[in-house]
Image 1 (cartoon, rainbow, N blue to C red):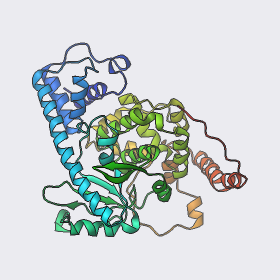
Image 2 (image 1 turned 30 degrees about the horizontal axis):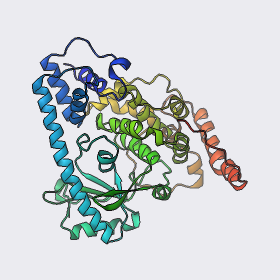
Image 3 (image 1 turned 180 degrees about the vertical axis):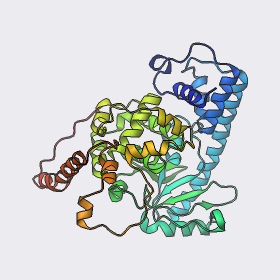
Image 4 (image 1 turned 90 degrees about the horizontal axis):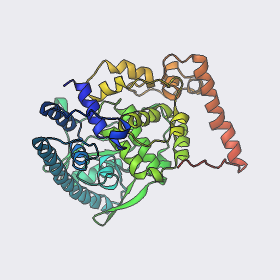
Length: 398
């Protein structure tokens, strides 16, 4: 069966809304070969446990052959075993950091698998991503080195140089790799992420009686969107989209969508938030508010074609890179000298497109109109309004 077709069927089965009513799946039973292809695709994308749950609960109205069902069940049991060992390791790591007085925020899978998904058996993981305060990043690494971890060696036998926001992975026999982060994105990026504000909004949770932290639900969604679109350019398959869908499904009632929009504007990440939310809504049926998408939608995004995203999600499709660059202008950022004031105001067309529009055809005049409106709102009208104590009340979208 064609890879793209296999992926379409998998994403339809995994929809978080009613997959039969929303996007009808073929009524003709799948052949054994088709089921093998779907199972293989789910395994590659790290969603085999989710496929097992959907089929076991009959949410898709489909029956898999016994051999396929047994294979998927084995994946789910293996995921459960692996994750339980991982959380046992995490508890010991948290004790080490607690003894050193270092606060820790659980990122991505470490947070999602236990506190967002319905069961720890559903979300596959391969490492632990932990956020610590930047000034304590080196201290955190030192504590883990003392606990028996070592820096992972990369190509050429050399340690990977730190990106300032993330150190080289730390490994230990019998343990999963640990990645320590001082920020949620690599250092040189085009955004205005307020890391201090992010730390002020963290929420406490407990693991095996040990207190730790997770991101607020709005910051969690924004981080997942940035990780999917900016950090990896939709190259990590369907699992990151399902993470977003699960947060919207499980915590959607807790999300203050107005705050999320405001934070997108503050961080200048509208396009990078809109694209993952839009694709997740279309492919997986996530209940993302329509007015939220309209508010975040960049210029000329009315007729986005999902086909390139589906090809990209199948992985290793180099022909997608130019299409995605045109949508959000992503490239690998390298260290540069601090720009002058004029260069901060008068950005290149590529930078303007990254911030304000995914459409490469947007005129420079239109982009600069958006740019000056944004600067006026952020640095003149908002400070004046704040000083007068007349902040507008948020309109809650529930």
